[in-house]
Image (tube, rainbow, N blue to C red; front, side, top):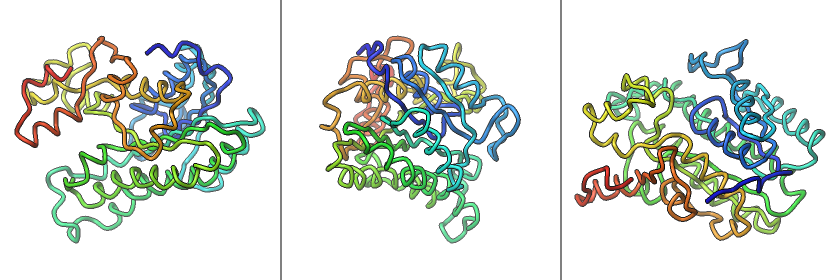
Length: 308
């Protein structure tokens, strides 16, 4: 699906747009003509606790503008209510509207020892609390301040970004305990907001990428986007991975869909939306990581390349 400039005149806030999925969503909304406020804690003058100085919100804003939109970078810690309030007041003054809110804030990977976390009561409590602050509290603080601006006009869209669909997560525990909570909560937030926004004509969904080749993921495998296939020797499942552009295009397609309300309250994936709307990843493929792993756990998966 080619969204063209269907979002010209629309205003979006990507909360957590420094890198990865957030950056890609901002760029694709900009490509469709939107004005996009991009927020995060890493700027050219300051680095967040993730320690990644290479990607900044200023870079993201520049990419949005280069793609054809209007990118506006604002340094915000979304756990600081006064900063979020000031951000939304600024959007209200400058634009008078908010059409799309994407809560994609995360930044908790450095707190998780995947495969070595131990039991819930053995996991460091301060780290557990921080995971939930970053992945859950930051989302509802942002919605608390942003939604009153959105509902001034009907037709708004809220996207809660998580890791895994409801179908994938419902019967599968994803240790450590706090990570599981942080990634299931946005699914419930989208469901709750879909009910609370119904009378205002707004839509709320949760959205997950598949196995995404973010900057950090590529570094972890010791590859680049140009030679990412080499990582399949280490993990064959990586063959079904996708670039952040796929979920970026999913958000742009949702935002440009006049009938998007049919999805409200639902848990969606980038791979399924690619097939529904007809967009592809940057290489022309339509990877469906969600279906691949559902089939894998059910003992039915074939060659991961066949899920592209």
